Length: 537
Image (cartoon, rainbow, N blue to C red):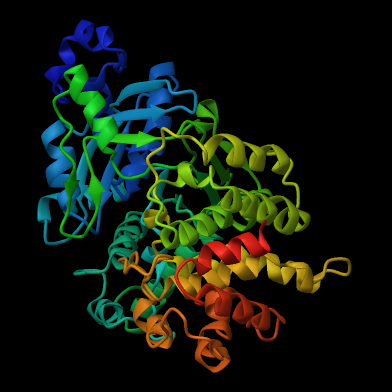
């Protein structure tokens, strides 16, 4: 079985092997979409193929839409050349359910996948034309949280952004500049309305996107490179909106066991590719079954009827409550805890960590005892039911090939939201006390211990990519297992950094406990396990 348009013609063969193939007329969808596109998505990776693309496929299957999605990749062009192009923009979605069953579906909602860069003139012209088309309703994004940054850790614009500010919309290099240049095309076409929808897994994602686009537009206007009216356009929500959203679905790197299973079926396109930019991707996407997408319903030019595919559309306040529930308490902090200690204890599968009595108890306490008291019920999703599913179904799913090493990526960018918001809520509460937080500080101490790049047996391991490693690792570089400290002055630059933790841990009163834990974690080989036994039980 070949994953391309020709290969899908023998529907009987696919059905015999248990693969669902699209029932709609894809050629008609492609033609209709190219004539009048409604949805462009930037970020062609696994989460898009495993979730938003599948949502639009559901609408196509129901007859609720006759349009597909145009996809752009503005960072890793190998994804287009090596994954989309050879397979006629088709993907195979492999859903790994917690009961061991597997659902295999060919996703055919993508009608075109292109590299988004002016250096690819034909593709760039196609994006410009699509943005000038009145039919376009929404542009969505899965470009990762760090994709929205314009400045470095010191708050200074990146040199590449400064170059884009000076060059203007004609020759943008950075992705957000390219996006803003395309939005400028829509402005020139008659100030046509559009919704720019971040679907990235970060707090206030719409606000981050809005700030970036408006900053770039302002810089260009200040230099006389665009009209002042363009700034007004991107600042008017009735013309350009930036809905907030909360997305939740785990789509880890392509797994060897899944590949072997597909090979056994006779599915021929299972080669896993690691691009030069370290993207792990394959013609198939392996994903968990649970999925949630909540979007602020603010679309000035209309939108696809994604509520028919299970998407929640609501107001901004509700999106914010759902996002805080998930990112600050019910999922993301638990993942980060398991990522840090999983790396220290030599785990390579997140599900296996839930069989570890200390780690399982630790995330249960952090979730139910320390985190849940500050959660505001969003109404559309029940926090108790959500965290129960996370701890009893999702994370322990033995068929999900997710790793602590993957989740440990960019931890310095996650701690402030995943734990800092809870600490702030405790500090502001009249009934809760920061001193009652015992295991969240143990996560912080574990992260400082993780930065040493040495596991609990004393073996070196590779730290996962993180933009702050070069800044924070030197502080702990001189510490060896068996050192007794004192560590206060060594750790002070880290623990006092409110950009990392959301708060200055000294001002919050948590730094002494973090240092105490850290001292015990570095006492020698086996100290991590001993410390967990002592404080978690």
